[in-house]
Structure formats: C-alpha cells, structure tokens
Length: 44
Image 1 (tube, rainbow, N blue to C red):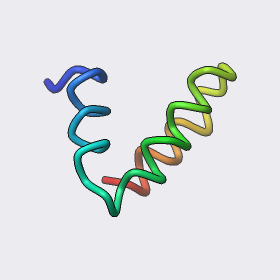
Image 2 (cartoon, helix red, strand yellow; image 1 turned 60 degrees about the vertical axis):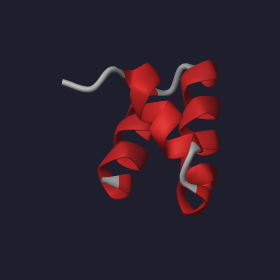
Image 3 (tube, rainbow, N blue to C red; image 1 turned 30 degrees about the vertical axis):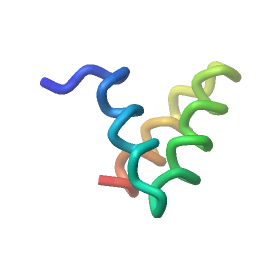
C-alpha cells in the first residue's frame, strides 16, 4: 500500500497531475474527506 505522502510526492512530480494534487491537498486541509475520495477516484 502506497502511503499518502508518497502518493502526493508522485503526483507533484507529474505536471499534468499537479492540479489534482493541489486540489486534494486543499480538500485535506479543509477536512473534506468526501471531496478527497471523489478526486482520488477520478485521478486513479
């Protein structure tokens, strides 16, 4: 299982997915797990 930290690093290293990484990070900061789940499902 890949840790969330490693996942974010790999996303940040992919320019085409940088927007998704930013959106997921913002959602985590705001405490919106439902949004995070939907973004993660669409990203992968």
